[in-house]
Image 1: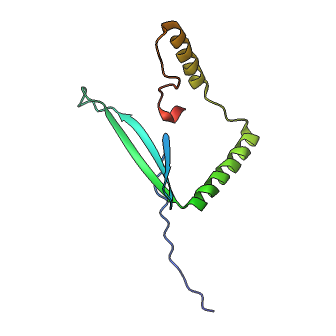
Image 2 (image 1 turned 60 degrees about the vertical axis):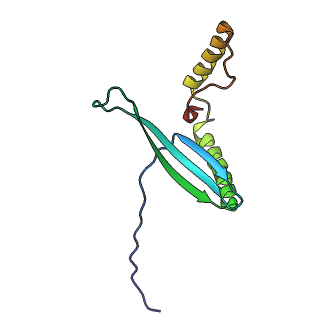
Image 3 (image 1 turned 90 degrees about the vertical axis):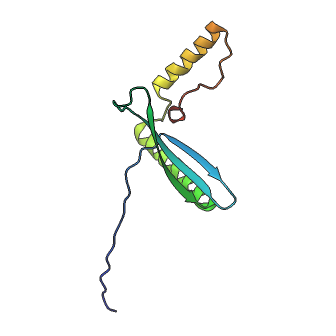
Amino acid sequence: MVDEKINLSINDGDAFYAHELSINFNPLQFVFDFKSVTPRVDPRSKDRASIVMKHNVVLVDPYHAKRVYGLLGDVIKKYEKEFGKIEKPKVLQILEKKNKKDKKESGKQIPAKIEAPSYIS
């Protein structure tokens, strides 16, 4: 057997923090759409807000989607065993209580679900 040298190039990609995730499917694949939505301030356009949205999409077949589901469950169990139960952030609990209180006091029809960005729910 002859030893051969192989050049290996790895593209790690860019780090990406996802605030939102949507998951869709068709008969052949699941589509994980990771999104990052960030406001930008541009001093030159004071009259207009800017929002930058980035997407990273991952496509997997149904079998692998189920494997991701199982793996995520296992990792969350290990995390909670080491660091404690993952709970809803305090600030979100306060927001929910405030929304309930405001609904009672105003008598207005406020949707049961808080209209907050999906990345904090």
